[in-house]
Length: 290
Image 1 (cartoon, rainbow, N blue to C red):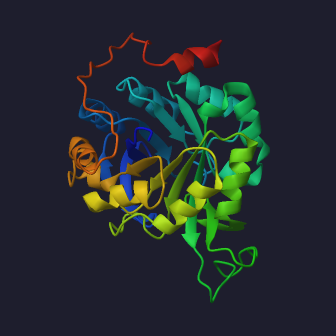
Image 2: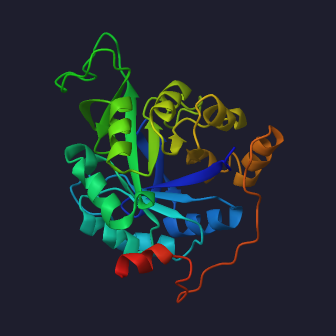
């Protein structure tokens, strides 16, 4: 069994980390660079930075904030939000990201996935999917939304969860992987911030449908929830935000718990802090500049 990853997420709005419930009622959680440095010390396996209003505000990701975050970490960094082109991907890699996450723009133009994979490699492209369970009484998801395929159970939403697409989440994940996405970042909009557990049905359905790693996101509130997402949901990694930001759990505690239940996790190792002129931590950025 491959080592399971524990990944904190920095949802950033106007330069500050925020967290809400089911994508609404956001509250401040701190400075992204400070939190990134903290998680680097805590033993996080990776870090995800999502500019959650870039697409809905029709602007690009804040490169200066990404640079500040990247300067604080030596763990892999995934950056998403407002990435609409290969040039945008290059800019994020040059700013210090190791991977780029695409969501709304990929739904609008799926070729963006294959273009990025061809230019930077599949391992650099993460397809983020925000999915919501379909109300059987309203098969289109939301009044006025495009119709969705009969039998679909989860619908893809874009623009920070604001726009229903009429796209079946499982079919979209399969297409994204076929187009070259090296990983799926899957968020359940229903469970996001609820602390009732990940949507293991959704996670399992997509994990079984694709041949690339799946990161489960949305719903962690107890230690057992991480285990359930990895075992029942068949996820390769678990992502969480509020339970880490507000001190409910520490990453080391989650790893100890998972290890005690027989799951392989990377043990805590001493981490050095990057210096201002240190570029050794970000080989992907140098690759993007080549």
